Every structure is written in C-alpha cells, then in structure tokens.
Length: 202
Image: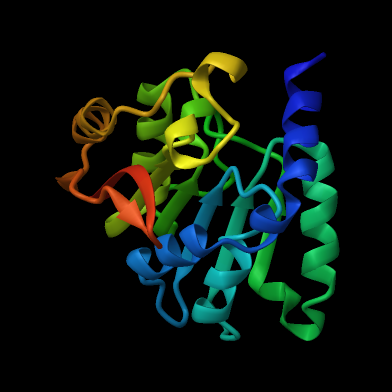
C-alpha cells in the first residue's frame, strides 16, 4: 500500500477529529492570528486549523489563509469546505504543495502553522529554510505534533507507521540556523493532549 493511500485511509478513519479538533483550535489560539493577517497552514489535512484561522483573519481585504496540502484527496475535501464558506471563501487559498516548495512569495506570511505534520517531514532543514523564506520579519511560526503513542490512547504509533517523533529541540535548532529567534519548546500540552511543539519568531 502506498504512503499516500495509507494517509488517506487514516484521515477517513479519524475524519471527525481531522475535520475539527480541540488540539488544532488550541494551536490556532496559541498562534493568535489577527484580522487582516496572512496565515500559512502546511499539511492542512481536512482543514481543522484552516477554517479556525480563517474566522480570525477575515473577512477583510488582506486576511488570508494560504493552504499547502500535498494529498490530492484531502485537497478535494478542502475545496468542498472552502466552497461552503460562500462569499467568504476568498479568505482561503488552496495549493497542492508541501514544505519542499511553499506556495508563498518571500516575506509574505504573518504567521505559519503545521499541526501533526512534522513527523512526516524527513528534511527539517529544508522546511525551516522555506519557512524563513516566506515568513516576514517579525512573523511567527508554530509547529505541533501530538504524542501519538499508545500510552495516550492513539493507534498512530511510530512503530506501526514508520515515522520519527518530532524532536522540538532539534527542530528548534534548525529554525535558529534558518534565521528565526525566540525559539520556544516549552509547550507540552494543548487542549489536554500531550504534544511536541516549537514556536519561533522571524
């Protein structure tokens, strides 16, 4: 079974929390998007963070959520959810991309978020470099992965699915090398769920 198909089936199985999640809501709240800002959501899945952020940045002339999601099936879900926004759908821009080439111009993004994505990313140095390219000076980044171990009631274990848990200290070091400052790895829980997280300011 291909990795893309595995990912799609996993999203279908967990579609309720992938559609809307307390962890994503808490992560968006921690990022604190403001009216008129441009937010980048990388690996958006079914949009649990996208549409929470969209309510905060718009509707306005400048407020946008730029979405980078590499999975074609999930893009269709995002397109349907965007269409349901009616006239406010202009707030959400959809792009089938990932960390290897973020869909934004240099210094365009006010705030970037990725929830439950970094354990799928092999090249954290490139991810950090791309974030540094698109996030404007003074902009902020929040990268969060839940602890999916069986001790916390999840069935998405590293052993079963062959991924590496995010190491906030190592990822924070890559962000520092890329030019970020105020790197913080102190967040260990969101909405009552244990997480690995790193935030930083450009």
